Image (cartoon, rainbow, N blue to C red; front, side, top):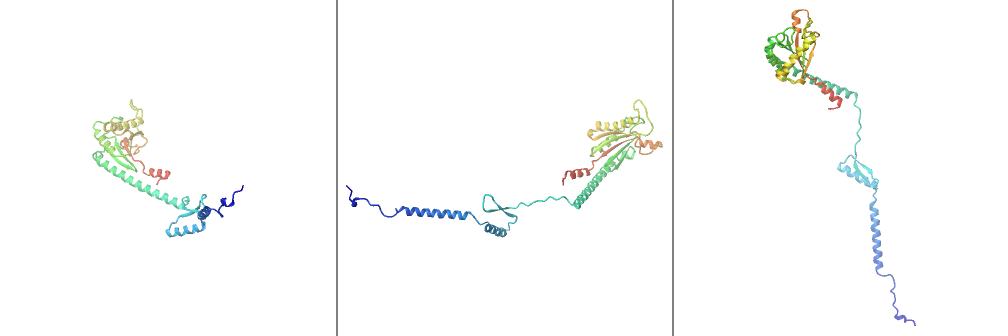
Amino acid sequence: MLEDESERTKCPSGLPPWMATFADMMTLLLCFFVLLSSTSVQDAKKYKAIVESMRKAFNASGFIFVDDATSSTPVMVKEIPQVQIKPPAKNEVKNANENLEQMKARVMNAALLEVRDQAEKIKRHLQTEIQDGFVTVETHGLQITLRIEEKGSFTSGSAVLKPGFESVMDKITDSLQRAKGIIRVAGHTDDIPITTDSYRSNWELSSSRAVSVAHYMLTHKGLEPGRIAIEGYADTKPLLPNTSTENRAKNRRVEVTLIQDDPTLALERKKLLGAD
């Protein structure tokens, strides 16, 4: 038996009330995402125009626009200037060479003045020995030569220093210790041949005399061995022609030469290395 229609539950007409709220929320969310999408893509031309006006306003020169692959918006970054290396011009090379020569001239003049000043000090220190004719002092460029005459130093045909000459050797060595540079000790003879049990020729005699002078300076005054070089020339480098007794006496000598380094070589090395 069918139930009475009045007893049946009737469904309300129309949509339920929550549907209106849900529809409004969806609409708002759609509008929100549309706004986000529209603001995420900027007009590059307008962006560049804005940044350009700001750069001029703040005087921010040296910046450029770079298109970033990960972004649709150009990025303003610091511009890195390109450096072009050009070979020096001929006039620049010429000026550099002239400046180097001028520097070398100044350095050499200063070194020569220092050598002459040192020679004057040695002369004052050996004033008595120079007056007695035992020693002479000369300068040749960067070299100071103390010439020990045979008078008072060696007997004829001998390489043994005479007794009493030690005081002269002490003063010579003192003068060399106060100065800087390499010390070259060279023996010389006249042209009269010699053949004895001790010396077979003037080569051995000249070398032995140089050794005697150097040995005295090393053992009695403690001169540095690394500064000394010994040479023997026999009669190959006479001061005067061997035509008289007096000239031959002048040629028999031992020369102690103080040699300074050439200061211009350091400038040349700097140029080769490219140093300032």
